[in-house]
Length: 201
Length: 187
Image (cartoon, rainbow over all chains, first blue to last red; front, side, top):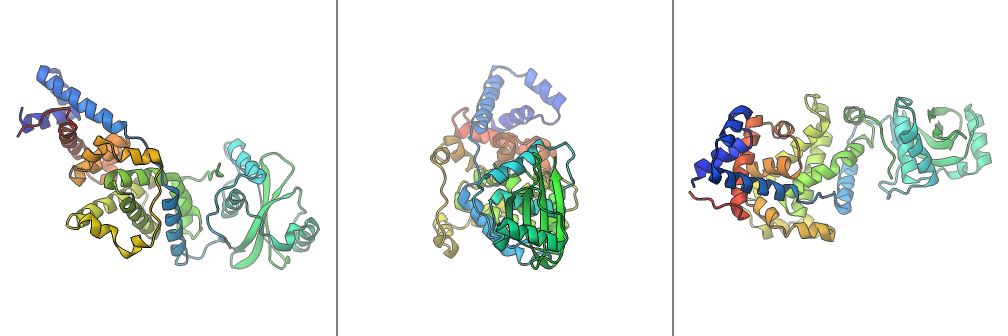
């Protein structure tokens, strides 16, 4: 048995120099060739049986922290969440509603936007950092003052954001329709609407 | 169950280039497991794999504007990880493992916690044998035989012809078959 012969056989096993020639080489092989091919097959099987591995949580956290550090050098974003980074994902009822929106929605839902992406993230993180707007009356008054349509459902999630350089509060509201939510951003002083988008359903 | 972002990889990368924070994070969420797997199976040491993955993703984050769409985003990300792995192996050849483990950054960090099943794989003979291959063969074997990538995709990731991937796999398999006792290799 020579290493050259072994290599030629292994290359034929791998489809070299081309599939047709390789097939001829393999078909013409004797018992010793077949023994080698069986050994190569056993080797491939052992390699394929190495269990899959997943990104460890601690490494994911390091990566997130590293990328967070780079964020400060990134171009000015369209929508910036004033955020606490990377909470564990808590699937609240609100998150379930948005998941339903995404998973059960029509094949071509409302085109994704920065606002929709930001809303998804806020819901996924289970964040309700909306200050006084947590009070339904205050929320209704703010939307009215800003000239936005009134809330058609409960507040699901929210967080301070910056849209186009202006500070506001992203509010993700239920709409009373399964799978449809509204992401609306009144300015911090409630004098304008910085974004208003209904998605799903 | 995380919320699903329906945007394609190229759309996410474009959003990242436009300054949308979180778009690149979504790419990491999508591909992180496979990128980690390639790095970890190639380097074996979880700290090395974590370092390389971090370097690679930060490089990808910064170089996003250079992505021309000539390959899939996942291929591009894998290519950066693979190149960092090769660099790491070559750089570390002359350094004993103890020297690598005692860098200041590492002594400040919590060790990476792998689950017990993962720890058990480190003791597999095939994992040990894989680590004895030259890095080019190891890389091809990891992509094709361990991770199950089609040869054409492995070639795109490694930026070599398909025949080169097949040849590296063939030579690597012969060496592994000998190391694992499946066949006797003679000079």
